[in-house]
Length: 332
Image 1 (tube, rainbow, N blue to C red):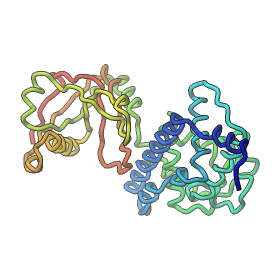
Image 2 (image 1 turned 90 degrees about the vertical axis):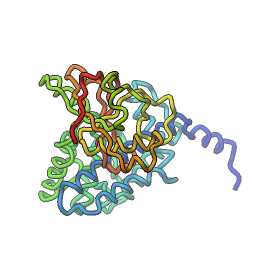
Image 3 (image 1 turned 180 degrees about the vertical axis):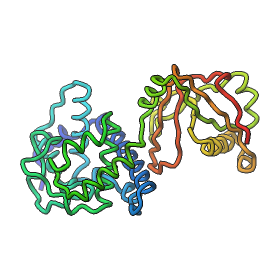
Image 4 (image 1 turned 45 degrees about the horizontal axis):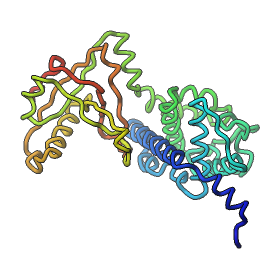
């Protein structure tokens, strides 16, 4: 059946711009990477959560499917406009499409309490999606892994929004979603394991400044570079934001650091490989530098999240030159 001119016009209007599509992909991929980070933390720290890392790898994949991708692109853009203080006019019928896509999402993914409710409608507050619906959602059938992935999702959102999962839990646990006392204990345990040990770069910088303490990091390099570094310090190199496909305009100058010496050694070996040392880099011991950042310069620190979601390496970027007086060679 041929489409009418009006149907074609509606489709053109509803198609997100390239800027909107790029923002949706960047924001969604970053969110998934953060969820994977917290899933990894929880599985490593809490017994009985085997398989959570695998759950993290599959997290929110339905958002890239045909039933959710277009509405979620508009939804993500609407949130961005709200944060930027700008208006966002949805095409005709898009609000309803967003509600339908959201219901599809929460009924498809087991880390959402609504997946376990049993009913198919009335699951959302269509007037304000961030507030409870008219009836409390029964989440008592959620498994331990479901709850753990849910908390990882809350932690990821909190890191993005600059708040805490405890704040979100206080507003929603047994208010929006009904849990058993045992489930509530698990939720609190998971939040403590995943979040209470988590601090953002800004929080760490604030603590360092308030306590007027220096912050110690490590940097790995090839032994032949030591003399120049001791003379001139560590000069920033162009870094990406950690997301595949970033344009060069999103790169920035920084020095790569880590809080763990063993990671500095791995970075040093990789650096030697990148500089053309090849296999010889695997058999030569990289030099490890201890870098002490004075408290008044902590504002230049940025904690990096791995886009791959493996969460194996601890990496920070220092967005300025590091003078030689802050650097010492670690005896190995």
